[in-house]
Length: 248
Ligand SMILES: [Zn+2]
Image (cartoon, rainbow, N blue to C red):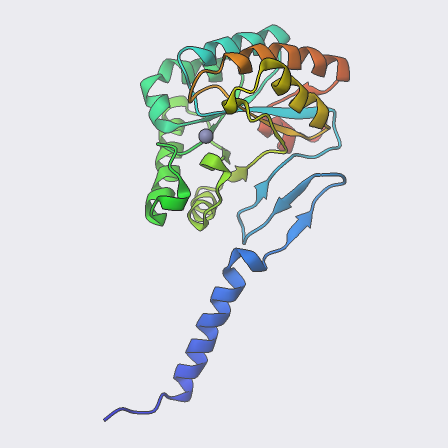
C-alpha cells in the first residue's frame, strides 16, 4: 500500500529546489569591481575576470592555443625586443609536444595559464571530462615548469559549471578578455592592430593566438601594437602583475 508523503519529504524537496535555484548561474550578480569597463562575475568562490584593475598604466597581452613551434618563438622574440611580458594560455597536449618552448616562455619571464589538455568544446563534452581537462593540464604544467598556475581560460570562451568547479578546487582564477582581436580569422595585419588600439585602455586584457593555425598576421601585428602601446605609455605585463602587484 502506498503511503502519503510525509511532511519531511516535502521539506527536503523544497530545500533541494531552493539549492538548485540559488546555485544556478542565472541568479548570480555581475558586480562592478572598478570604474569603466572593469567587471567580474562571482559564482560562489570562483571569480571570472574580463579585465584587470584600471588604476595603473598596465594591460595584459594573452596568447592562446600554443605552444606552436613556428609562431611562439617569433612572438617571444618580439616581446623580448620590446622588453615586455605576456601570458600564454597553453593547451596541455601542445605543451607535451613542445616542452622546450614552455621552458623558454618561463625563462623569458612570461606567465603560463591553463587552456585545458585538448581544447574541448564544452557544449558537447561531458562535465566530468571538462573538469579533468583542467585538473590534468594544471598538474602537467606545474610539474613541467615548477611554477604555480594561477589562471585558466576556457576554450572558445564557453563557460561551464565544470570549469568553475575545477578552478575552485585548484584555487585558480578564470580569465576571459576585454579586447578580442579575432586574429584566428586572419582578418589582415592592419585590422588586428586597429582592433587593439581602438579598444584598449588601462587594465585591458587582449586576446590573441600563437597556435591553432597560421598566425603570421598576429606576429606582424604584435610588433606594430607594441610600438603603439609605447606611444600610449601602456605597459604590457603578466596577469599576475596586473592583478596582484599593487605598487609600480
Ligand atoms: Zn583556444
